[in-house]
Length: 377
Image (cartoon, one colour):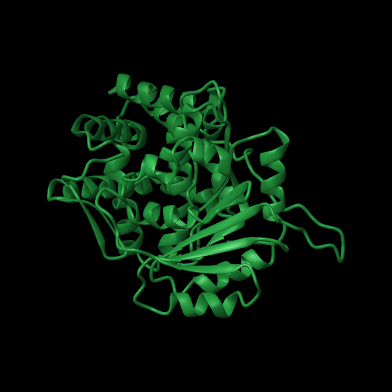
């Protein structure tokens, strides 16, 4: 037992001391403040918003786009919605600059979001393109900050992990951990390093150069990807491009997850895809999470001082690594005590994703089911 507890403690210590600091929240971007009375201008940016039955959120998203400044071209791709998404979009963006594209039927081999983006991308003639999910609200000034970051280095792709809604009990419990686990899986510092093979992006908000997107073959080059954001970032890096991923309080998702079932469905939709449908990786992930989260707790019950002491050290390192994410989202550090339970819930979601895949359902979103036999990108 002492060996297992020691391995857990060393693993958590490793998370804290590795140079790329996956627990850190230092990769962030916030709005640039414009001079009073001077509106920012964006004649070189086209915004693509894929929307399928997004009547509840589309108006807020478009108002956030309008608040960024003038000169934006905005294309909403109405992906065969059966609600009033298109009508609400027109009402929310009455100015010139909005185009609504009526989406065509989904071709074989494409994911729905990427097919919608492809139809919009065919109409893009600007230097930059902003990919924005229909539930994402941009606060004033953030697009200026993203453009500056893209142009200063210069970069080919800048993306922001949106601040997810944290209103319901389960959102408050699970959402910070969702970001934290993503950062452990895709350390932002490594993803932003051109020398690293790690590639990641957050699909809710991505600003990229049109030329580079065309260079990699557009969305057709990743047409079947279900984890499209990270796949896009990988293609950009494979073609010599530079990418950057960070956090922001000014890119906000308003999609509601009012209960555990809704969050479970969101995570389980692509969790096994993240593991490349590998039983071996699922087994390794399960063993690793047991080692990290439960072995230290079991160690506390062992009546030997060395085991208890190392278990306490492991739990202290575990909590220390999680606290920066909790503080970034304004949550109490005490929630770090619940991390073993939270980690177990995410493991159960991953297993349910695997069970869904083995039953023939690779993923499901907005009434579309992607089957097991379809080739993953």
